[in-house]
Length: 289
Image: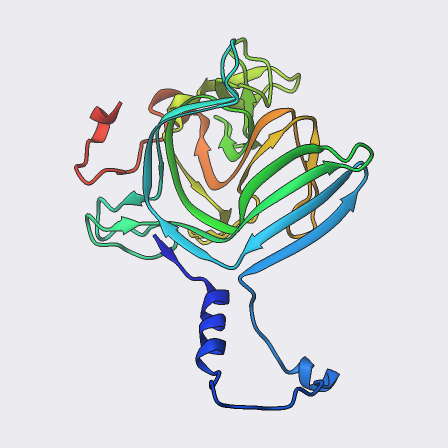
């Protein structure tokens, strides 16, 4: 993991520049002089009021590049299941082919880490403006891109995947429950809506073994997204987009917003699925599951 704390660096430079024997008179600086000063703080706090909620967002001036594996994750666990349940979860992967272009347009030697990139991580609180109580909180990145791999059996939230049907028409992927009804809560399948909120064609979520988080640059590479986050809500919360665009409504419980640059043929998803990227030093291939 690589972390760059710009605020700490600035503080170190400031401290190193102080002479223990120097004495000077403090004088106010002019607005013109202040306008020529630039910098980046280690921590930024923003406040926003929208409708019935007050939002407080704490953003850290840090860069993170990581590759991590987690055996088992269950979030929002109750007696009848979990909002999100997955095993063998991984951020980032390992190159299998040194000549293959990765999502960032670069090649990585075989066996080299292809990290998940996250810039300016943040935590945001949503407060009920009338009651003053906590309605929810979320964690995310101002910019993120990279691979996310898992064997997912339950998903709550939104997956920004594009699916192409047999006729070549592109659709926004929809999440469905076990009965084939569209849902954003504890979904078990993903596919194409038939126009009535039911599954026209869908596949188990386990078929999506690896996804690339980010935005499609249109040239085969992936750009950064500001929409990757996980939220925990006591009630419905309209999380405001960081770029000032449309808000994203997250329902009660766990909500994961997973924007991806990928477009997949529905027939491939149903039959062979999306294969898992290499996430272990010893390439386990299909034996992972």
